[in-house]
Amino acid sequence: MVLAAIIACEVGFWVAVLGGLVARYPARRPRLGTVLLVAAPLIDVLLLALVTVDLLGGGTASWHHGLAALYIGISVAYGHRMIAWADVRFAHRFDGGPAPIKPTGWAYTATCWKDVARTLLAAVIAAGLVGGLILIVDDRSRTDELLGLFPLLGLVVGIDLLWAISYTLWPRRAAA
Image 1 (tube, rainbow, N blue to C red):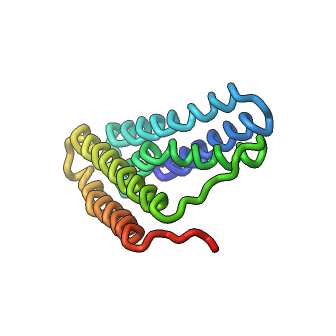
Image 2: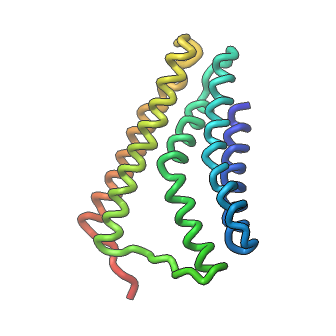
């Protein structure tokens, strides 16, 4: 059930984002677009409620519950940036806005380091959610599976950190 809820929430998130952007630009309905864009993070709240109810109702935690926590962490940390990325492209395509800028050199390096901070925030949120679920359920035999998420979070942050270090040492060059 939890995996289906994650998939439904991911689809719902992107339907809300794309629907908001279509309403904002091609349909020229900016208020409706704003409402739909604001609905996107509310979907994360719904997913968190579903996961919590599942575990409090006697469910045993699986990797799906950890994935839900990771999804929520990424959505909170990167959601605004993803929406802004798509918004610039929709504005350019449908509303005559400026073309998106692809950063190079030190601007790209700075973006990489900001992403490290975002990834760290996503990992902290996911770890906090998993820790909270473990405390709320208070039954080690039902939540033991969630402990495997912590090393994965460290690995993801480490990879992103190496990515930023590599672009600090070898900045991205501008296209010829």
